Length: 323
Image 1 (cartoon, rainbow, N blue to C red):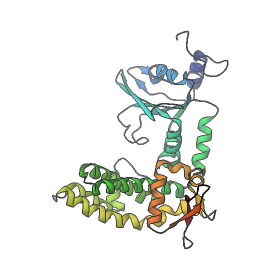
Image 2 (image 1 turned 90 degrees about the vertical axis):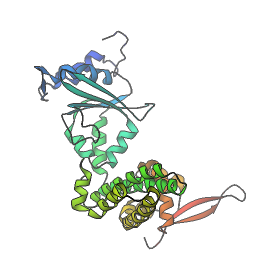
Image 3 (image 1 turned 45 degrees about the vertical axis):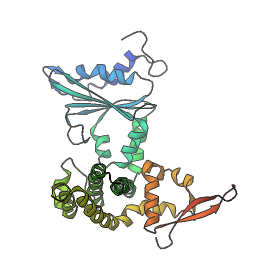
């Protein structure tokens, strides 16, 4: 190792971390053999590279998995590093050595935390991966938060994502941007499909539409109509946005149950109060669009409250009493 390697923690050099990460866990972990060499021989430099960075809070190893991370099933091994203060939300590098395909993914801590609390496969990731390095018991705290995050909250977050993609797609369609609207409608139908499975307590798999065909065939019909119809794209989008809106509306009470229950804790809320609530803030960028949708569906009432500025009113939000 180079002499300018930074310390991982006070009193620990990269050599110390190397021993802690791999050598002390050899008896606990079974590593796959590639070409007569143990996997640890290949991954050691990559793991140490991640762990030596002062902003790394955890390094996970996922061995030969296809189910845990959608879109990352092209690898024999995945090294998943959770970091703070990263410029981009996710960085990736692909490696190939001795016939073994390795994916190195460095994910910003805030994005990782949101994924763990919102995605259906979070528990599978946490239990199916090996923690090679963690700082200040980071993964232990994440596991506790994930267990505490109930199913209703996950459904609310997924519904908010659905509303955001659908609303943006519909706006683009109305502005004549048909290809962009098409792309977002496809995303919306994927979100709708995953929400429908969550509603039934079914975990979404890579073969999503195979599951939907069995459990929610009407959603599959919408998707097939969008991609297979011979109608002009403008007509296709017009019909599918209309049909999808009715289907989404049928899911609204279930999808908004979490946020409406939380907002019933107070009579009225301003946006800052809502966006800083410990659970609601995890809705992220989807929150504003969701609130507008719930106002449109008359589940939330907007209220004007006089502000400190003459003639300017602050907007507050109140759950409709029948909710």
